[in-house]
Amino acid sequence: MKKFSFLNSAIAIFLVGIVLVGFSIFRKVEKKYFYPLEHVEIIYKHASTYKLSPTLVVSLINAESSFNSQAISEKGAKGLMQITDSTAEYIAGKLGEEEYNIFDENTNILFGCYYLRYLLDKFKVEETALCAYNAGETKVREWLRNKEYSLDSERLKVIPYKETKNYIERIYKNKVKYKKLYKNILDK
Image 1 (cartoon, helix red, strand yellow):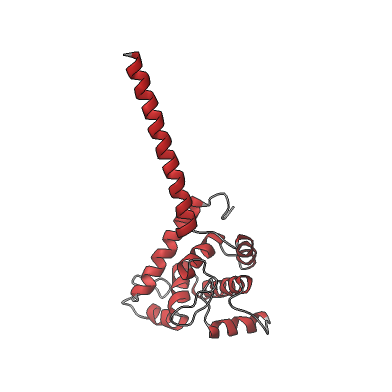
Image 2 (spheres, helix red, strand yellow):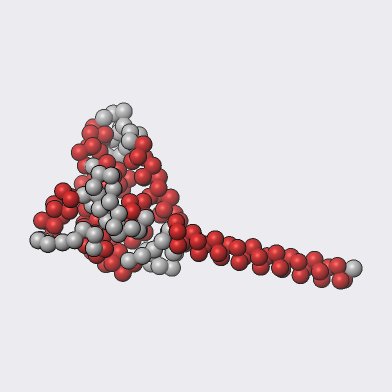
C-alpha cells in the first residue's frame, strides 16, 4: 500500500511538472507572437511626456501594427502607430519638426503619443478618443451628434463601423493581456 501511495505521489508530481513546463512554454509563445513588447524605453518616454498609460500605448501599437515598424495599411497609415501622411504633417508642424522619418520607431511613437493625447483632450472619453484614432475625428463627431449612436454627445452607445468596434475590443483585450503578462514592466 505504501509503494502504491508513493508511486501515485511521484506520478502526480511528474504531471504537475509537465503542466508547469507546458504553461511556461505557452506564456513564452504568447509573449513572442501575440503580445510582444518592444521599444519600452521609447514608449515610456513619450507616454510620460503626454501623460498616457504605457499599457494603453503598447495595446494600441499591437492593434495597429503588431509591432511592425514598417507596416503600411491599405489607407496609407505607416509605422508602429499607423500615422497617415496628413496626420504626420500636422503633428510635425505642431512639434516644429521639419524633417522626419515616420518609419523611425522614436518618431512614430512620439507622433502617435502626441496624436493620442490630442484626441483624449478633444473627446475626454478614452473609448471615444480611440474610435477617433481609428475612424477619424470628423466621423466620430458625426456619430456623437447622432442620437442613434450617442445619448450624451461624449460616449458612443453604438460604434457603427464594425472595423472600429473590433479595433476597440482588440485594444481593451490587449490591455488586459499586457497587464497580466508584463505586470512588472508596464504601468509601474
